[in-house]
Length: 206
Length: 259
Ligand SMILES: [Zn+2]
Ligand SMILES: [Zn+2]
Image 1 (cartoon, rainbow over the protein chains, first blue to last red):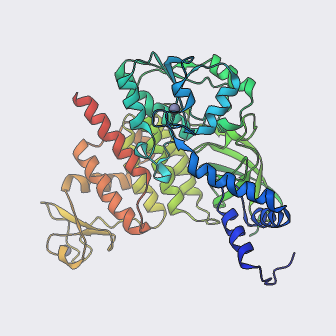
Image 2 (cartoon, rainbow over the protein chains, first blue to last red):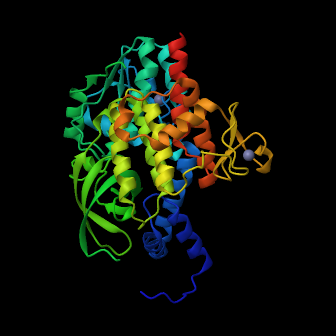
Image 3 (cartoon, rainbow over the protein chains, first blue to last red):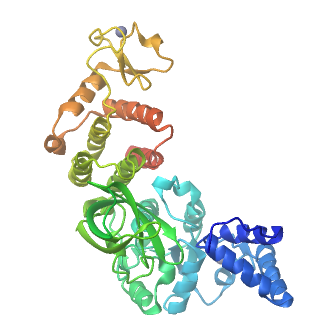
């Protein structure tokens, strides 16, 4: 490849620009994806476009657990078969999928939509913590499982939540450190996660 | 000097950002290469051998290979994990503030081994000091000193008179003290009490070994924190973001003590 200026058709340039905004996609990958779409049969491209639109139109945040879902409340919050005495707090919706795959947990969830990250200016107010506390106050839970990622921000968030929840007299547990420090929960394999769930431990008060 | 193709360095991790599917860009501070960035591949997957050695404020030994844009971290081994900072939310928040100060004030390729030693000693101190907040005020003073921003506190910057006995003023733009007669010479000045001035001068002179048990009284601690904040804001032209979290924890602790 050379660096000479090559004129790109405007719609293609726009597509490249849009791809470039997505997480994990740099300028090179954006170009590759755009030219791949150009070669795609029209029906397939249309299906992709519709899927994107549908996601924005049909998917909502569950007003109880803050998970992304097609209905509000979401199927997990509505389910009769789940243990309503336990609640598992995660950073992102994808973490719920990872935990569900273990088939080791049948309680409820709460999605924070992020972690405390002081250096990025992200404090507790930016997360769904107020909603969590309201849930804990207005329902009877016997256990809160803190399943934030095993890295610095995840630990900070767990410690912060522990402080807030302790006065409510609910048992607070944290996923066991079977998970290596510094990783992302969404990449954990089922066995590691199942073990981590099994070995969760009480958080000591400060 | 360009680093060789494969090289080793000590480093303290300052921050991480996500890259691609499972990689991270690690920003760290080193004794001889100043601030630097490197790519750590696959560290977001559990089971990565590198990830546990690259968490923020870990003092680590790195092996890097020159890359096209960023160098690639091929090995990492923890020298000191500063465990006490990870188990106590207040100490952790103060350490993050110290880390952010270093991140904002230093540049790539600008060596300052003295600052590196101060920083690593400071992380130790924040983990064990009786009063970590006093230790942090010491760090602010010493960091500014090593970066060439030592404020002039011995006499009034304008008239040269000794500090007034009833209180003086601090001017971030002038970088030091103004007496009550000269305060209007600078557009923005902040009051500086006699007790706070004494503490500031002591923090400029004291050895870090004495900081373990040093405890600045609450009113002066608060005053020094504010003056440091204003001076740093002036120098960087922006806020230290972690300060908001430190402040929030402080207030919540105050409230729960009051209950
Ligand atoms: Zn729900
Ligand atoms: Zn004067």
